[in-house]
Image (cartoon, rainbow, N blue to C red; front, side, top):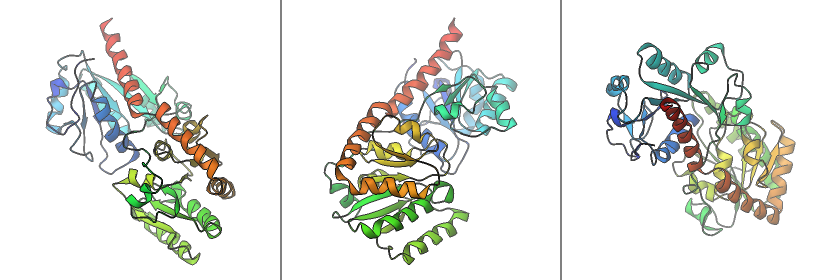
Length: 362
């Protein structure tokens, strides 16, 4: 592969960019988070730059006024890779390649686990390569695809050096154990299931408290208010803590002894991997890629979607059995580091790009 590009926000020259990672959504989302984590790792090996709003200035970035430069070949390749992750980004790539005749090849990553619309299928058929983030996702695609599962930054998400350090670092009581549920606060994410599980479990377990980290936006604010009232009515307001959006989320994972992912629907879902990389056992519903993340790991338990009784039973087992919890914690850490390092995802994608370039040289 040609040279690399430092992962910094300095202005880059279009001619030096071999891969463009567009991000056309200003609001933070799972896709945006993937780009933020992945591009710096990819940039260690090849010249890649982002394009679009909603991204930190620390990433290598093209500006909108530089887009006409994409109509010319890069300095060291026969064409660029345009790696889209949403419909508008696929459409922009098709326009660049097929209308403006830009020298680009189109790659699309899909995390969706539902039947695609006709419009989405139309766009996907025009991609040069398609990536699925899980085997389940690949099953919804009607074209050939390659499974490349998301990885996790195991340097950023790592266990505390001592058991009490994690809780103390975020101002929590070191004599309590904490079970967490992190992510946007909304029904789709199952936050209400987590709250109801805690209302059932905590009264008989005075050594445990719960942490909910995440934001309730717009129409979901009333949902969060209702959950807080449920907690207050159960007399648990001091032990089920709503801490809002956190920029220091790895520190909050280090405060946990158990993580619950109660989602009713998910595309991929990184939170179980973030917990496992921190050495925290996981109880997760069977949605998204959770079953594939936990597969053969010994890192926790999978429960049916929307099954509160099963969630309570599984969480209770881990909360009550320190040996089981410790064994699962070690397995979780080993599994995340062995199977889901971020560099592994970056290398797999970079290898896919290299295949496209090699094909052009034959």
